Length: 130
Image (spheres, rainbow, N blue to C red):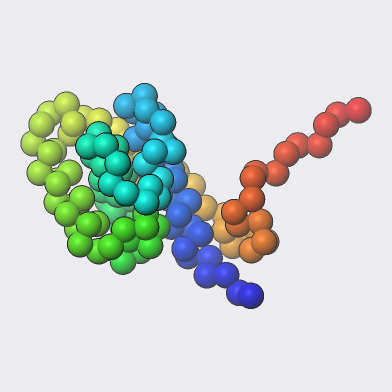
């Protein structure tokens, strides 16, 4: 089976954005990643921030964002508009500016050089020294 590497790369970008937002707000990023429901209001807000960061940091389209975050295009569009409107708040704007810089500085995912079988597996471990 041939895997579409773009979706793996987009999901990696989404995980990075969730991890960064979780880090910035000292929250568990796992609650932001592909939650089947909206979750608490704070979780939804942080997920919207992650969606926004992927949109501006990686120029991801609404369709790609929807696939990466497991949401429909209307939800993605709402999330982006919501965060854009929130940027009027200076504190939020400062945080988002910093996170955008980190997103843009991130190296690209290396999906093209790994086995498709390893796409959802844990990272490789180093060999123990004897």
